[in-house]
Length: 132
Image (cartoon, rainbow, N blue to C red; front, side, top):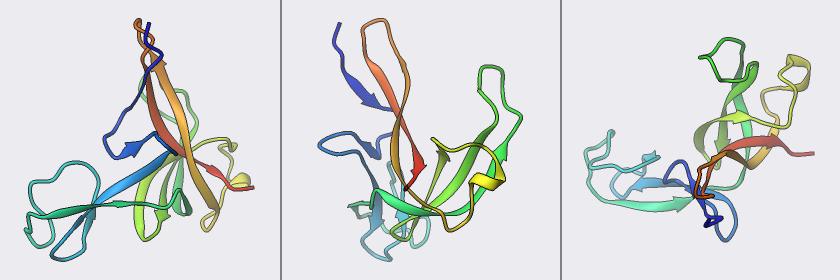
């Protein structure tokens, strides 16, 4: 058994503190998640990794009530502004009720366990939880 943790996406970093990073085009400043061969905005090929703030503001959200078998519903899917970069993620630690959620709500990055394999390796995802 290893007791290791691996992020489910390459732009989620677990150590030393959980954080997200985006690739920023050196030519035009456009920002992207994940690997890129070229910028979708200007076709530049040089990128610099940029660490995003771990807190943000909900720009828009929806309460999802129908999903594939095995997915617990309802849940809240949201677009969160983290330092000028929109990040898609689920809201966690909040009731999926419009009375509990609002645009403009302050949130922070939260890690979520996606399961552990038979070797003890945990897959880790992320969401956003309200700032109290």
